[in-house]
Image 1 (cartoon, one colour):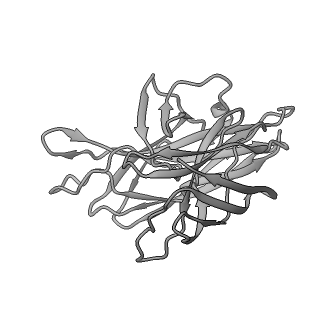
Image 2 (cartoon, helix red, strand yellow):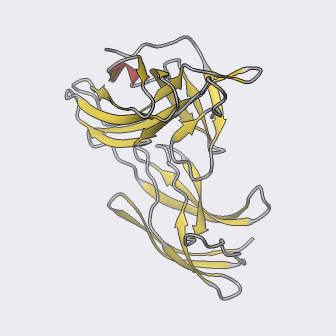
Length: 273
């Protein structure tokens, strides 16, 4: 069954710097017999490879955690990741959208309390498609709004990245700088350029020494760097479970190697406000 394309609707929501690519628009508390949105989705994100002319089938699981039966509507959206690390979803087909390649198994479903449902979808890039990345979201929307003066519903977006053919990122470090966060703290930031034709992410750990002689292990924020863009990626100290994040004193010297895919990005930089 091919997914339907509802009328125009534009939704914007803020994401954390380490955007995990599962976007919860509204979370509704359980109230009386009106349970609102009550689902967990796994996995929250797909990063897969697709071959032109060959269908690619994938499955995610919807777990209904409400106390009563829950109804859900399923459909696709296009989305863009903004420079301020917010995301914009739209029902309208974006230019060069790959959503016409996407088939979902059904548009609505009802689940019993505690039930799990394995939801299937398929991506079928046409034969002859040049290397590119197909990006879209599968939206799971609750059909049982909670009533608390106004109706409040909710939905979750499962983000899908499908690299078609040999599409791949090409990441390069263009600058290092210190950014003031909203809480007034200074943050070591890498400006990373993606000159490839698929999104990329920095991964790994580097060693750092701050102005107080404190030795730190640091890791980059888990955010996508889209093709053709330069994005600031924050470096943050690795914090053990149950421990408080250390106060970083600048200037900060950072050395080590980060990774993207099978590639390496050497880092030897001094960060000073």
